Amino acid sequence: MISSNDFKTGQTIIWNNGVWQVMEFLHVKPGKGAAFVRTKLKNMEKGSVVETTFRGGEKIPVANVEKKQMQYLYKTGDSITFMDTSSYEQLEISAEVIGDQVKYLKEQTNVMVLFFNDKIIGIDIPPHVELKVLETPPSHKGDTAAGSNKPATLETGAVIQVPFFVNVDDIVRVDTRNNQYIDRVKG
Image (cartoon, rainbow, N blue to C red; front, side, top):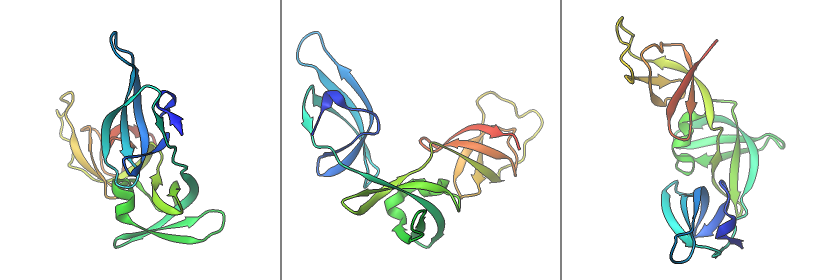
């Protein structure tokens, strides 16, 4: 059990019949009334995000999530194959368990696979990945309006908005948490 006062970002808890990860938290002490903790929680199995509040000092069970480093090998249909980097054992996971994060996985990428009670509940991918642009409309002279973007399809199939100066075969850094372009990587 953990007190709501001791929440940390990334902490996993058992709440509302599921395993949840604390994404954000804020301790609030109003002038009148009891203190409380405002949180943003992500369901580790379904990927949904909810905002909720806990009373200050409320006890919540901790979810012991085991992390195992595995390498992404390939995707076939609706299943994704990973290999345990220590035992070389291969494991197939349904694409729906991983959700949208699969669009950032390049073959041979190492990720942390999350297990709860010997059941796979998701993966932990790096917050930033570098991917090659496969397709984007060409830039035209004068396309320099501030804040203007164009769509770009990356080597993994992900589609993001990029500035006009990004071209095909450029390598871009992407924030996997919000699907946003960060910068162009010098090759």
